Length: 398
Length: 131
Image (cartoon, rainbow over all chains, first blue to last red; front, side, top):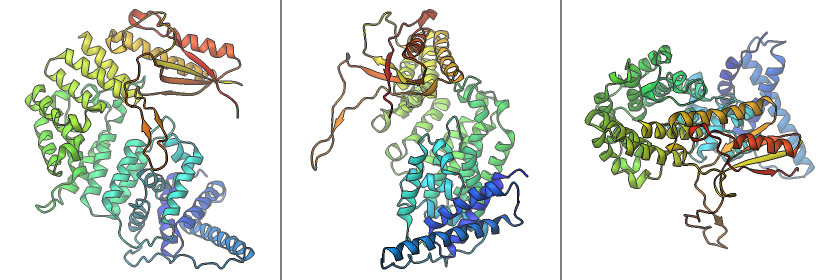
């Protein structure tokens, strides 16, 4: 029998949450479950269990007991006065629906006490069920480094009471970070981020969770068209739109609509819903020329309204809006919008790249070439750098 | 088998054999030819089993040293003299011999530039110490 790794990994948050709710320490339970998973991968192909979740729980529990026994023996040997195990997590506020398990674990892993890199690593292991090796590959660091990052994160959480509901905004940010950063030649975490976001939408009614899922789906749908056979970046306006994943777009739009349906005057759409709406408008255009820039600009106005001082708090949104302004009111108007960002992000390649694009819209190819070249010099990603050099050469030659 | 770093530079090194303008001023087809040449080098090194790693660096370079007890680290304010070396990136290869490392470096150096002419770029070849 072939092992269904997806199904196996889907059990991870459920089993782990069960152990932690029962009063096991998060750190020890997570270790025990990892061992149980490795054993499952070894033995299930030959001997599939009747109830996989119960099997994992039993084996992980056995590991926990073994670990406690050897720990107790060590303590006896050292004649140490063993302090009681840290107080068990008080989980009164949580019922045990499978969806709640995911949410509960996400809150544990996305504790504000952890650095973003640790939140991401721990989430992928404890909720996503990925191995340390896979996570290390995705972020291009040695396996020992990732193992250390994970165990330090778990140590930070040790003995912490896990009863206060966490900050959903942090969870959303962590999932989006997984979506945007975790891909190397060897492994791509975007599908994993989408899977986790989908689980999250089953666990909470919060529209922003749906907004995030929709945003990921609507962007991911364009992935097949974003690079050509040689790995070169293809900008949105030159992509072959027949390569876009129509099913993913349809699902993204449906999820977004269900989020927007929940909006009220007191609760206007949040940033992920807005960004998803912008992505949906791009996905909806049959050609670049048919893009509804007026509507996109309207959504960017809403996005900026979420910040008191957008230029310093959310420069990426102001930059995105400047592009929309360029398409609606002309390149020169768009360029004026970018001026106020000079202080905040004038050092960043994206500022120069957007200005280059706006110069092109304005018909000033010389200035566009200069700005593309400057953006290329400041780029921090090889594919983007190469793309910007090409754009500079193209603008100069035109 | 010995390992070597083949270092490419933004600037520095011996007098250029053949000066050339920055790439954004080349004809678009020359840019394409250059980039695809370097992609092929990487692919063929993977095929021969000699490729270990390849990375590019941004041109930002900050020098920093300990500032002493209770003091912030001391950094130099750019810009640095135009003559100082500035590494742009590297290939790390695992090869049979020093000669083979030089051969690969020379091939990298033959990368096409404006008009398809070889760049004759100087490549620094450094052997890694074993542990």
